[in-house]
Every structure is written in structure tokens, then in C-alpha cells.
Image (cartoon, one colour):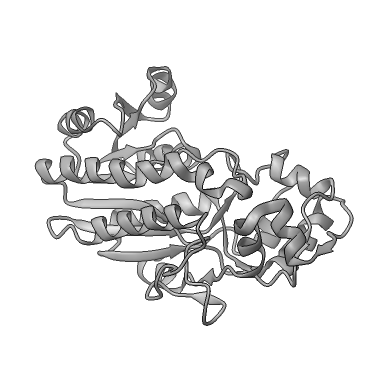
Length: 310
């Protein structure tokens, strides 16, 4: 299969491109920076330089690649400042709206048969009902102000991809990534904050997180490209856990003291309203559909064993 990967140099792209090439696919890797071309070639891909926000460049890239499938992995997420959550996701929100529209328009013109797009199942589900959500559950209909643009951008992406009746539209709702190249890799700012006791539990710490190792997410993405059906898949591990459960366990792994607890109003002052939501109100996700329909099993079934701190 000829596969065009947009966002080929991000944390997921670095895992995905060599896997697709190794599986025998003809991979075309779209990157904005010419300096990435040599590395992409070494990974077995044909590099194509194009800015995802420039429709003309995207159309030219798709014409060059002539792909059977487009894989949308465009993000621009750096350090997440929960006090300014909307600012942290602003560039990615634009890619999820304009970048999605550009890729879909180019894909339609080229007759692309399959379109697989990265979404988010870690921070986006409705904060009501049971602790673990399936793909049939809706995105948060009333997010807090700081998280509203991110969830709106996710909603736009999902509606556009699933509504494209000319192609097989597949949406992958990834859990919170850990592993190489992610915000939770060994030595990362986030893990160091936990090590230094600067990451307290807010309130009861009842927010439920679903994690996924970046390598497992890449394997699931290959499976979706090869045999997924139109629709949504949660790509998460088998072990959703509350903050009150995973944060002390991670601190223990890091050799740090047990995290302190602070009331919600203190958490709001330190981490903003979004930080409080992440700690107290998130819902996790079930991977039963992905395991059943994609024949996929995470090699790291739980963050407890998979998350390495050194």
C-alpha cells in the first residue's frame, strides 16, 4: 500500500514510519522542514517537503505520493502549561482544523481510499457518567473555557473525517502517551516535577487517566491502516487509573516522596482550572473495540510495568 504520513517527524511519526516501511508499505513522509529529509530516508520513506497549512503545498504532496491511504498525525504540542491550556494547544488546534481540511481536500481530489487521523481520548470525553468510556460516548459537551478550543478542534477533525463518504475515514483516540519522544519519557520535565515533589494530588485525585506506550500506539495505527473499518477506535492500555492511584505509584518508581494532597482551590491557583479538571474529573477509555476489531494487543498492557523512569 502507498501511504502518506503527515506529521512524520513527531513522536508518533518516528515510531510509525519505520514500522510501515518494515511491513512492506511504500511510505511517503510529509515534513515541513527540509532538514528532516535525510532521517526520513534512513527510516525507509520518501520525504516530501510541504507545509500542512498551505493547501497548495498539501495538494502537490498528495499528487506526488499518489497514496492509497493518508495518515494524519499533525500536532505541535510542546510543554503543556495547564494554567494556559488553550495557548499550549493553539498551534495543534489549527492543524486539526486547517490541516485536516487541507489533507481531506487533497485526498478527495486524488481518490484516496483510506484516511486515518489522530484524535485524543485522554482529555476529551464528557466528564459525567461512568469512569471508563467507549467509542460511542460523546466528547465533552460543556468543557471549561481553557479546554474548549482543543475539544472543538478535535470535534471538527472527527466530524470531517467520519463524514467523508468518499473514503474510509478512521479516527484513533489515543490515550496519554509515554515512552520515547513523549512528555513522559525518562528525564522529562513532567517526571522531574514528580521526582521533586512539585506535582501534588488535587482534591481526591479522582480523574481517570488512560495511558498508552507510544510504540503500542504506533502498532495499533499500523493495524488500523491495514484493516480498520470506518469509525472511531480508542487506543489505550488495559489499565485506566485515577490520579490518586497512578501518581503515587509513579512517584515511588522515581524514588520520590508520596505526593502531597492539596484542596481544589489551591490546585486552581497553581495549575489553573484545566489542571484541576485533569486531576479530578477526567474519564478513562476502553480499548475493547480496538482489540476486537484490529487484532491488536498492547505489548505494555499497563503503565505500571511499561512506564520507565530511567
